[in-house]
Length: 152
Image (cartoon, rainbow, N blue to C red; front, side, top):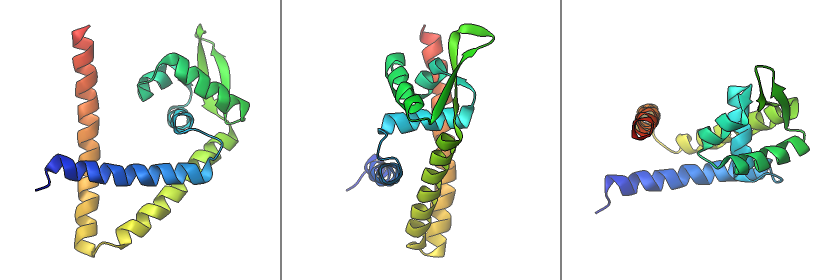
């Protein structure tokens, strides 16, 4: 008998496959980490390199390398933070923002096609579940950060 966690893991694998395929189709020259960094910057502009590393739960040197590649590809811009010269601010270029929008568009098309394979009741239930699941993930992330701060 399949457990709840196994069912969630199977759904996660399906979503990751969609995410990987849409990134790979649109951004052949980028790694998944580079695209994730671009996504964080596009969603939170302007943002510091440290915040991107924190958001992605990656080593700052990994984010620095990923962002250097994005700058070289003219997808990101870097500038010194006028309020703190030790920090570097990141923002997407128009090409970087366009790339993120194209991946989102592709993902919407794939998800629309997948959801069409469900009958109306199942589709409505799936969408309601996605909304609740996303809220639970946010609550978990908030709790995890709170727990980690308390442990320091």
